[in-house]
Image 1 (cartoon, helix red, strand yellow):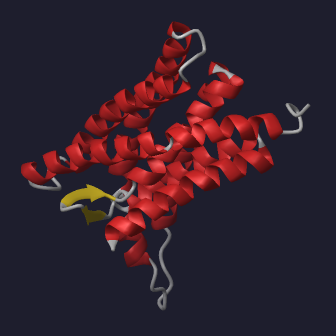
Image 2 (cartoon, one colour; image 1 turned 90 degrees about the horizontal axis):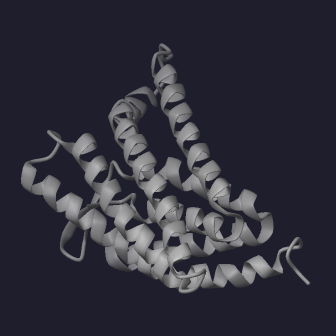
Length: 228
């Protein structure tokens, strides 16, 4: 059932991004970036089997970050998209620092959470560093490439700039993240498989989000500041 659950989860997450945009405008997109980025850095610690391949679970939520960034780029311009990227980066740094501080508190005698928190957040700094470097590199490229293709096509072919910018950015992101986060953790063969499948599954969600960015254009016209 992993495959059915994964596809359903992807569609649900993309729908939620549209809903948050409909009710909260650009603030909703900032929320999507922060929420998805924080959770995907926890979910990425879990590996699953999908279609006979080993991959990390955080692919769906991270792909949702790119959808929100592209929506900010399309509707509000490069400056707002860069704000979203920076906001996501800052919140990831703060979560990492705050949870490391939390782990240094001595637990009470009847505490049961410390070992579980250590298992998750003790590994988090390495994952967070990998994620931050990969996130900054890939998202910076994504914003640049989105506007590059928008200029090249005179604002037409939204599907092209949405996919061309995101797919290339996923290759950058997955290469940087997997090498830093998982080198030495998994055997080389498994690491390479995770790297390849991460790109493939993120690419699948990116293609899946194409109709959603067109739906977002309709949602955009319905917002109070744009409705006629």
